[in-house]
Length: 80
Image (cartoon, rainbow, N blue to C red; front, side, top):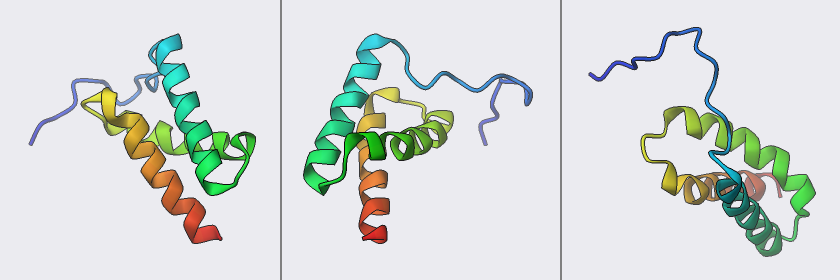
């Protein structure tokens, strides 16, 4: 089993790596809002909560928008 080299009291990683990463996630939130009929403003807190969980476990960050969108879409469908 691979052990994390970060100490337990290490600060959590930042949610977005840079402005480009923030824009990628914003486009994902907008696409999700358009396809679900839910406002982006309503989805953003949920999206960021899911992203916050996934970013802690991710080894490859490039796929986070896809996985986050998938999880948020599932949560929105369950609540309809």
